[in-house]
Length: 228
Image (cartoon, rainbow, N blue to C red; front, side, top):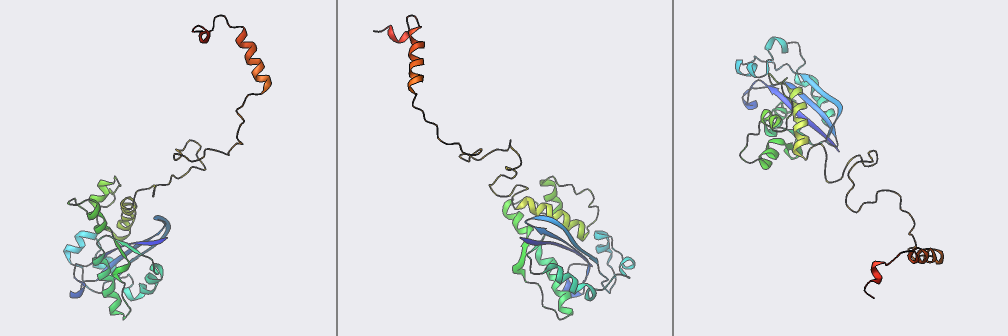
């Protein structure tokens, strides 16, 4: 099962009022685990950088001035995403910005139906609790000490760990991993613990009965005869 964890950084909150993408970070998951494949690009927003946004992610107008514009990375991004579900923290925000950029290029946008919104999952699991990425990292004891500022790739890496915990932790489902390789692993009740042996006949042989009778004859005042 292929999924993409995705995060973006922007110049603000309103793509319909001129705010633009400045960073895209994606991590490929296979069966909920990182495969090692990533997509990470800084993007020249072709505009100034508001001070409030700069304080959040630390990406200055000067730093981004020599980075590619979105049109130069759009095809590569879409190829990386493919048709995989997108794991996003507050999906409406990131998909809204991506679709605004794609619309400028007259490219069909990404459907919200392919988004797995970890904010919604967290709110369902922990009603009334904080569900920011930092709060979820604290809840699941995920080290986010490197997150002094927002960054798309770092946040995607943290979100991948959070998502794994949200969908059931590192041991998925009810099956127990490692039974074949760990002889001490717990075996489910009723499961065979090794190769089956042929059934043993439990009736004693004539020789066994004779030996037992000889043994009993040597006992003095056996308990089972005292009541006779």
